[in-house]
Length: 180
Image 1 (tube, rainbow, N blue to C red):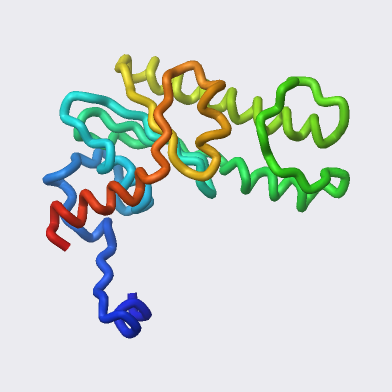
Image 2 (cartoon, rainbow, N blue to C red):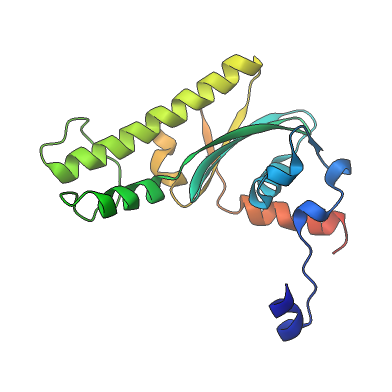
């Protein structure tokens, strides 16, 4: 904040310090939600629809939005973070750039790791979305965002929309609403 103010004469406002209650009903402890997750939720707000936003960032997060209510979510380890950690900690795992694995059974270490990460995260994503739908007994539009959203969208059971600008669109929506 200080750097932006001193260099650019711009005042920064922390998203969570704004009174967002006119935009969204937050049904969890607001202090514990990342501002990126709130921006994503506000970006998709629709008084008639429900959303599950899956963000492939440092963590893989699932946020549940029912009309204009933020119900909470799920935080799982991020794909890239997990892969990087495995490579760093296991001396026999080579450097790997993740992509879709065609086969579930790898014929070498690289293929086996690729399969484990691709199909493991595909299972995690499908499983969590299914459990959220079952628990809430609602229909959702599923939105993927973040760096690896494109990698998993075709192997998910539900219809997926990818929106790489979701977070920034939420921030723009908020700035317009508050005339910032």
